[in-house]
Length: 33
Image 1 (cartoon, rainbow, N blue to C red):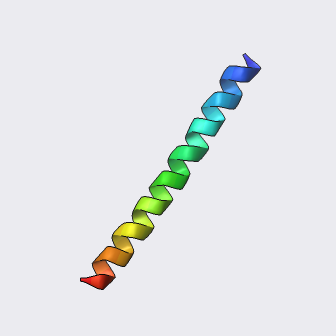
Image 2: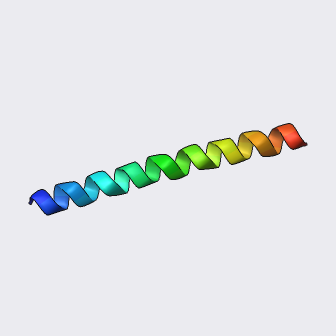
C-alpha cells in the first residue's frame, strides 16, 4: 500500500514538473514570436 501511494506521489510530482516545463516552453515560444 505504502509503495503504491509513494509511486502515485512520484507520478503526480512528475506530471506537475512536466506541466510547469510545458508552460515555460509555451511562454518563451510565444515571446519569441
